[in-house]
Image 1 (tube, rainbow, N blue to C red):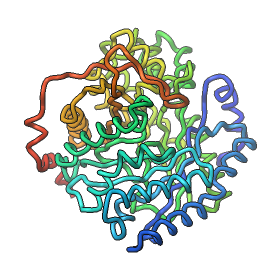
Image 2 (image 1 turned 90 degrees about the vertical axis):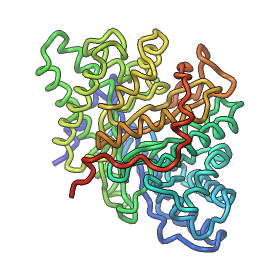
Image 3 (image 1 turned 60 degrees about the vertical axis):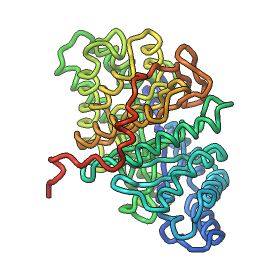
Image 4 (image 1 turned 180 degrees about the vertical axis):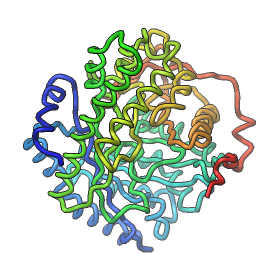
Length: 454
């Protein structure tokens, strides 16, 4: 049983070690909003979101006051909009209207972000999928809180290389439309391989078609807590190190479980999952990179980094699954550059490169995240980076993602500023050798042999 005493045990973590519940995300199915009339569709979408989510923010604030647990974000995810708008939207501009409707609804209920401006195209694109994807640059540039994701591959279906090529172009266009603000719209756009249906974290959250009509998912985060715990076992062997991470992850996940159950009870909406990812912030002491340094590295990126991250990711999951029967989403360690001061320091010191980050994504919970690259980077080069990351996810049966920001007008040595949880980032160099002929082949990369399991 969960009780207030377990929360009291974590008071020190909350007050001194940056423990927080990163997000309560309310997933809402919009399948019953589908309509062939565009005006009616927008009206139904707005009404459904504002009705189901009307008490979400107030509930989160009440839980914060009752238990003293900071809940940093209250968010909404909806059914992928390519599915919802297919009957009514005949042009990219029609889909952009839906994005504006999502944005208005998010502002009305007071949530920080709304995800689900999404398309799932791992094997092929419908006409609606393509229209939504082509609308993404304008939709993200013109809205404040809408987040977009596109699933381009899976272990079962392979990689849709036509989609990969298109997304390289879309990311470039998105950057161009917000070039006067450090190409900021790109931070609201992520591409996936093996995207989960129940991820509460943005920009990748959407409400999968396998989910209930509405669901509460919670994302917890405690890099600072893990780092502080490890300072007490410096010099100890790996067994002690692993046990310490597991015990700490257990306590952190229990807090998330309690918040999820309380929110579910108060809103009368089923509890879905706890995502126990270690998601950093730019705050000092709230860094995954600092954990890697505490394990024994001079900087994240030094030799041994991939092994240390693999150990961390595994022990976090082992501790978390003992604390909650419903661990899901991504769950593990995030390595976003702009959102992690330790990662920023490692890049600035020359210890961490894009290639090393790619290697690290083989063992962490997601992928290349919040990485600023030169604005002159070609669309095909971005597509090549995406293809590499999709291949890692496909072959290793895990979720991988890419969220890069080609900062228009900026180059290596400059930096981009996003503010808040999104932080800032130095522009990282990109391999400039061409992959044009590879990306322009078209078609699909087939699923790996181990996908044929039944």
